[in-house]
Image (cartoon, rainbow, N blue to C red):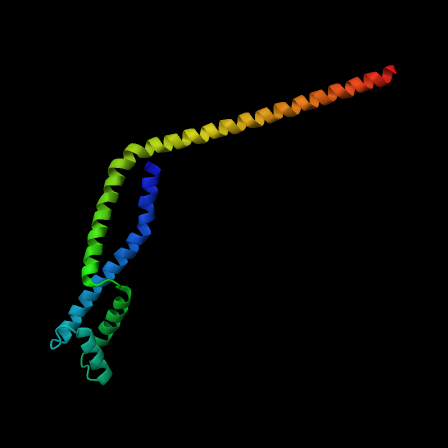
Length: 162
C-alpha cells in the first residue's frame, strides 16, 4: 500500500504542475490587465479590448500599451481558467501540497526504510531461488552424464566379452 500511495503521489506531480502554471498565468494576466487599466483609465472592464481598439485605430499614445497587450494576449491563451476556477485550483494545489508534505515528513520516514528493506529481502530471496534452481539443473546434468557414462562403460564391457 505504501508503494501504491507513493506512486499515486508521484503521478499527481505532472497534472499539479500544469494546474500551477495555469494559475500563475491567470495571476499574471490579472496584473497585466490592471497595468493596462492604469494606462487606459476610461475603460473599467474591457482594458484589453480598449487597448486593441486603440492600437487598431492608431490612437495609442503610450508605447507601453502594445507590449502589455501582447503579453495579455499570450497569458490569456495560457490561462485557460477563469478567475474563480483559478482560485479553486489554487486551493486544491494548496491542499495537495499539504498532503504531499505530510506524506513526505510523516509516512515516508516511517515506512520508506521498511519498504526498502523488504524490497532488498525479496531481491535476495529471488537471487537465492535462482541459485538453487541453477544448482539443481547442474546436478541433474551431472547425473545424466554419469548415467550416460555408465551405459557406455557397460556397452564397452559387453563388446569386449563377446
